[in-house]
Length: 178
Image: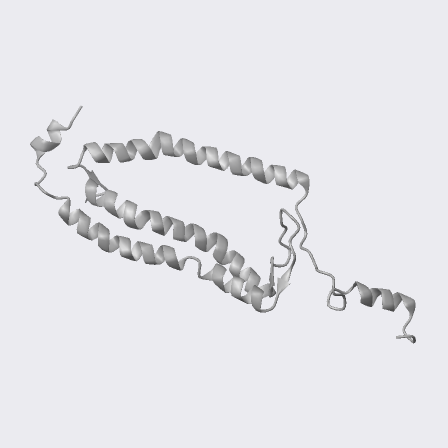
């Protein structure tokens, strides 16, 4: 190493694979953190408002009008399938688009957090087997939701046949009116 110029020696010391000190991922700036927090609060407020103004009144109308139909399906059947299949499938889609995409980035870059991903707090970069395992877990994170939706479809089918105790008639539908 004595024959190598001083500038080359200092450049070699800066390389992370030559140095034993831990490598950390890039962090968000304070303004980026504030922007993400405000955006998350706005999206959360929108979800709460949609739930109070649309979802809960819709579910209430299904409960008081058992003979109505939703898109040609009896309302009690739509309610069971929405609860036992729709909610797990919605969660699965959300997990696929968030965790699945990140998992593929982790597997492609071979490190966690993946290349060019910023973090909120100081985070050491992990490579090797740990990154591969965590990337694979991110990719298959949707599997419990898929299993729950499959199980829920069987439960919803059984509950929808039990829920039809008496046939719906126009007189029964008229008696539940305003």
